[in-house]
Image (tube, rainbow, N blue to C red; front, side):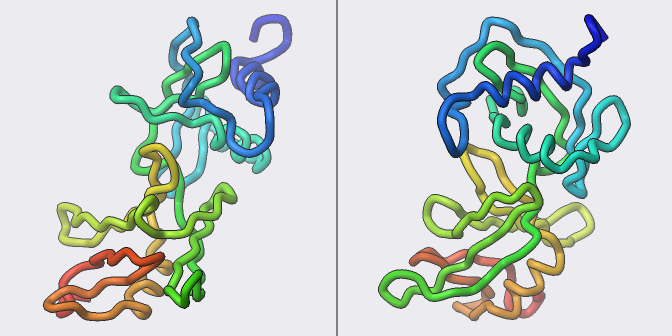
Length: 187
């Protein structure tokens, strides 16, 4: 620690300086200083710094707002610094889904992530399912600018319950978009 502050505190302070409300425009920032920081987002969505779990929920939420996916990895980006982190799977976890009726009577699926993002599945926020090496489905939801949330297993089971069959596939509809979840016979 230099001068009594750690690198993680410096990043948190810089993130708080971001102008405006809502999500900061990290896609517009190109800071001169780049590097790496020992932050890992684990498969379960927990955040760790130098091996220790970051227990302050407010700090995790703050950091989640300054995440950016570039071609070579995922970064915490502030106006003055861009620091590469490690993400074991997806940077977010979708922990809840609510089925509702949207505009024009269309079914809408609203997700909540572990960091408080609310996302409606649809053309701009696709659901995709890949199958891992053991044959298990790994479902994801696009949250923003290439960043995804792993859909937690209980939430995926809810989607399967809400699903409808089209041909040989089971899937769900949200905001006018159809998302295949997998073979109807296998789910």
